Image 1 (cartoon, rainbow, N blue to C red):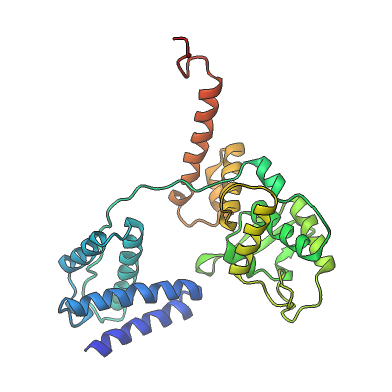
Image 2 (image 1 turned 60 degrees about the vertical axis):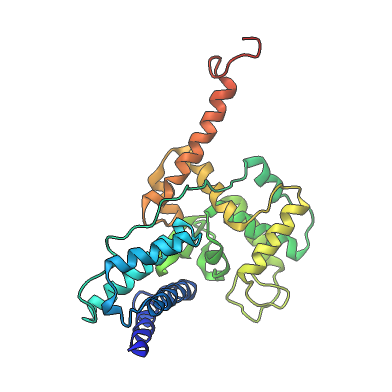
Amino acid sequence: MAAESADWIERFLHHLQTERRLSANTVKHYRRDLLECWAWCQDNDVSSWQQLDTRQVRHYAAQAHRRGLSGRSIQRRLSALRSFFNYLLREQAATTNPGLDVHAPRTERHLPDTLNVDDVTQLVGVTDREPLTLRDIAMLELLYSSGLRLGELVSLDTGDIDYNEQVVRVTGKGAKTRVVPVGAKAVRALQDWLAVRTAAADEAAIFTGRSGRRLSARAVQQRVKQRARKRGIPGDLHPHTLRHSFASHLLESSGDLRAVQELLGHADISTTQIYTHLDFQHLAQVYDTAHPRARKRKQD
């Protein structure tokens, strides 16, 4: 029975890869979450997925919370379990979905870190014409210009950018494709890099390392942090910070939440709404600084 239950996990993962075309990284997370849930089942005398009921799923979530797991992590596990049972229902291997009415505890939502415009300008300033410098600047300009995820950046091929139309074709989460504008400065930075990029073993990749092969996500993270330290940018800069900065600055200037949602490739606008909080923070700071009635004067 245990072998059969584990086999259903493998069938579901195959379904995610072949039918839903999810990324290898996403499938890996599903595997981890479902195997952890199955281990819990075995420890709690649940011998098959068909035996798992809503009460037990609530107990599973509560136990994870007591161990200190965040509400967000518990929600991810529950989401994986619900998706898995939807698949079992489709395959007639289950009659109910025990995770439907179970919710993770709420946790405080932290606002993402962003750079101000001056910091971005400082970060991408050209200091020399060394090939790796030009490559790093091109990566940074593209991350900020088009709001790309790190995984989207490293998977780009040379044919994904249309320099005449100044757009980039991106394959995001769930293998969904979107077309995003590329700013004039990012276009110039990319052209500067491609002019000095050597013939690569992985010729399709835009961003390559010294070996000529496609740059890994970890390598990009390290180069971004190094660049930030050299340019005097405070904090531990992550490539995703430039995506957050892109969204925040665009929303602040345009106020068009739907447009920002499309550009970021968010399936749900509630994900994009975090940037309205960032925008309000900025407005509140301006208000406190400028409005004569915003703060009490020291002499009052």
